Image 1: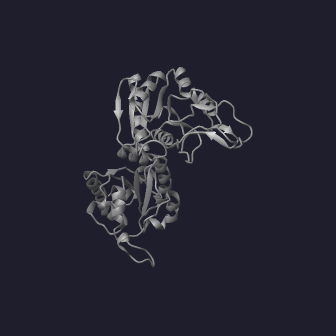
Image 2 (image 1 turned 45 degrees about the vertical axis):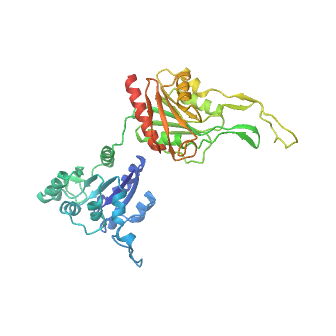
Image 3 (image 1 turned 90 degrees about the vertical axis):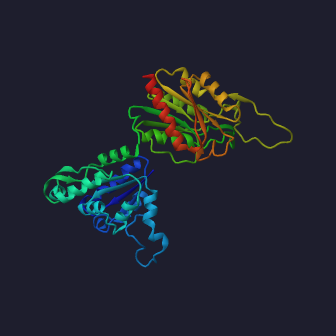
Length: 401
């Protein structure tokens, strides 16, 4: 989700840098719009470095660059792309322009162009904040559905004491979370997620593995972290950068994953096993490379440890979710896994479908639960699948009591 953050010209503008960081920790993409006066307090480069995005400072192309259609209507594109429009800090001048429909710069024009929810955090001198005109403008904006975050009281930069300080960053982020409907329903849970494939050596240069990319598990870990959980992510080899979790452990073999899961089992209240662990490994891994020779060769395999089965055998109070990547009789095979592994929920995934399965950004799954629910989902991003999965996990936790 994307937040467009407007920063206007007052001393509290420097606090917007920390606000950007905290919004990013919520998994939000942030693009910053600076007014001309805001640039007297903080430079565009600061926000460009923090967000990795263009910082917008002018309505039209600046300097020697010629104006074009793209720059002329950029405010429309920014407004359309926003899931939320946040202004922090907002000066009395900006409040007045918003309230009366003045659109004379990029920030005010974007405000009029956006259909996204608007959150405003004012900051100014106490006398300005308490002035009847400012209060009338605030009331007018509230009546239009704008969310106003009241300024804090305290010592102000001008030397006065009273209401006018920019609200705490945590307060602003909490309001953003509320308006966007971001949930914090896993704050008291520790979620253990396994992701990716495992590898079993044949010889020093060859190994058995599968096509799992780790994308689904990483999405689950990211979604759980956004919802307030303490997240432990154990992953086999992937090309992905791990999301910001509390504990990340990289493993390679099924046995290494088994040992890592066992180490973190006691601390975990929810276990979500998306990893595609190898079911078999060579009975003997050769110490030297196997040379090519005429004729056929056979490879003797032995079963690996049943990591999921061991978890559910020691389940206790934990809620356990498994994944079933199937190519035929998908729901039937997944339901059999739900029973045989004694799971609370299994996610059935037909890996032969376009837009589903390994190394795709989307997935098509069906949830099967211990209490008999069958929930098919249409194709959606793996992060959206993860959020829907966690909705069902929270429901099951509530039912269990």
